[in-house]
Image (cartoon, rainbow, N blue to C red; front, side, top):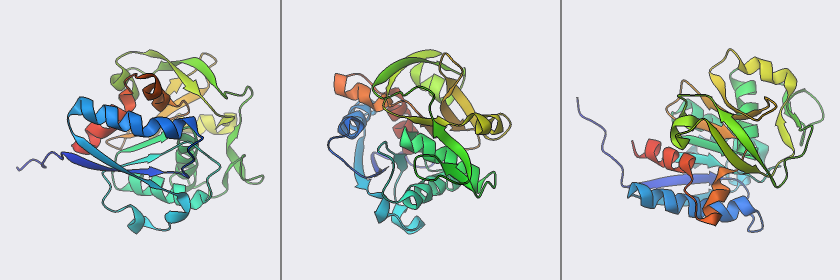
Length: 235
């Protein structure tokens, strides 16, 4: 059996509405460049605004998809199309902050059949899967406990990490119970037991985090999950 060729140049889709004032958007190119250097490969990335994404055709040819922070997105459906495309086509996927939230929203609607699944930031009706946090995590840093032997834990090489946030929304208590038995598993919690990371166990690399690990690149720190995404994309 022939092995698939290893890719030396990767194409990464950064799905979100670019804003130079968003700290995470400043960090993401550095995180990708640093990870690519560690892995000794080339990685090109394109910022795709959510209004630019109207069908799967807009995502063909990318080796990985990262749905970035910055919600509410200008076109929620564009973000959901990108997430579904990555999920259904085994494309390495990373979702941070808003990307994490919308990955859960897409899973609720298209896998669990919750057609009325809603995000409280943009929808006042329906069943809330993403709800306001009891305590804001805007510019906060906290410890996260990782489930052992998961993609996230293997990327970090440890079971407890400390990362920063910039968000006001997370998984609702009602929906959290729905994640106990499905393929989208909770792989990270804060000290109170609230969900901070998920991954799809039926997928080669599909990871979402509420925390913004990419920010570490601004301080010159390695970003383990970006390295893991590029490694998965390289094959």
